[in-house]
Length: 522
Image (cartoon, rainbow, N blue to C red):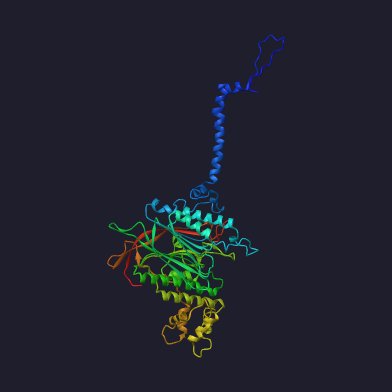
């Protein structure tokens, strides 16, 4: 139909014949072509651009993340996670250079092993581990976020070491991104364990140790002794390659209050090992970073024990929270299988020469705190508690045998996870201050009233410390920033649409600082 069509005039017409416009004639007219080119075509292009920009706006944050993913389809995350990218303004892996000063970052994350993730609350036996597509997609999201954040140190708990495919995915992805990875399974073939990843751009691993607590919970810990790749400056003329000790662990869940002594004992073993490791290797004091799922909040005995040993919670320092009960629930990091929300994930920091109590004394105070809690739990006030401990003693004092019997009644001894004979004896020595073989009411009251979370005065300061004191230079760390993700948990709220894990991800950024510390023997 491309040929011209004409209409002949009537036979009696005296006018000249008129031609009907053809399709070619329309497109051949310069005016219409210009109108199409300058008006209609730009209109179509603008519609296309508007549609593209609208879609791009919705996915702009995911585009950032997808750039670090091998599979763009897996880059999509839960709606709660797509609201913002953590550390978007100072991506942790590059925060050091962009802020003009050296920094290191650390992420701790309980990633919820598929063997524990329940898919049906009505049928608790249905677990994610039975559905490959589910656990694989979720863990790919986790890996993508870890690669995006690119922290110097990554500490994961509930890592499914029993699945070779998942282990390979993490090790291959993190290895390709420049990390050395170290995994450790829990004892008795429990299926899960720990994974610690150290970025080779920031640290080289000098040594590593594996700790087995040998308790009925089959818990373990990893200790890594690392050295900074880039030297940290002490002064204008000297710089050092700083050494740090990193610990990754996952403490026992307190299914019963009597298990608090187990968790306390696990931390005690970690700190004992730290002391022994530094002593045996003749190491000077250095910063220590403890990461993990501690399965206890700021109100717990483990928190207070670590504070008495000079450790600080990086998140609480960054947000200027205190140790008081008023600040105990300002943030959460976990919704447990009972539906309770609490803050249990910590990155602890202890700087060199930080004032601290003797470890054995801190341990005794913490253990006495648990004993006091167990007695108060059965509504025993101070006088009643003393009478309970005294039992049938003829005098107004507590004997060692009565003390042991009382601990057995509150389930702190006599069980596989309870206090050992030697630990019980050590506690008794602490209680019997005058060493006369019995604990009188005054000695008991000293324990009962003890405020054993006593803040130790700092004997380290920045480089403008007082003159005239024998001092040592040391490199420590200042907490620059700490963020929990998803961000709702920072307000004490657990978002219902968050399904990446039953724990929040905690990342802290540290910067090295020069410390001057008075020489002392701890």
